[in-house]
Image (cartoon, rainbow, N blue to C red; front, top):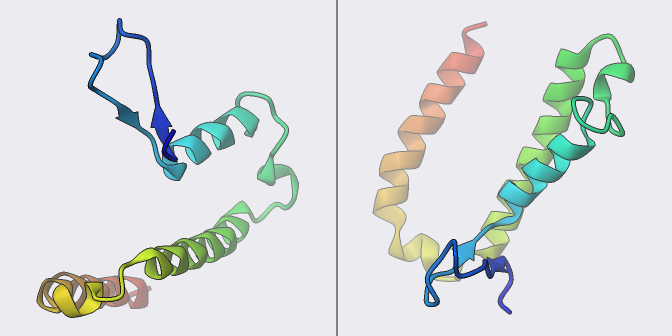
Length: 104
């Protein structure tokens, strides 16, 4: 069975249909289950009073790791083949993000 493929009973999908779930959906579900609202095993609020700072720092690490993993998985020619569309989408988005985050 390919990674991420889930076969459901025929009552939900036809024989030729497949449901694909990636790591994001599974990780989010796992986090909700382990989090403070369900099982309470993982509760970052109990670690410190400054949960905003803790959340930002953890998210920076998670975002950097995720972007690096995506970059490693791209085919070798992806950047060359999609340079124009990447420049059109990424440069204005990054510039807007920098302006918003610098306006504090």
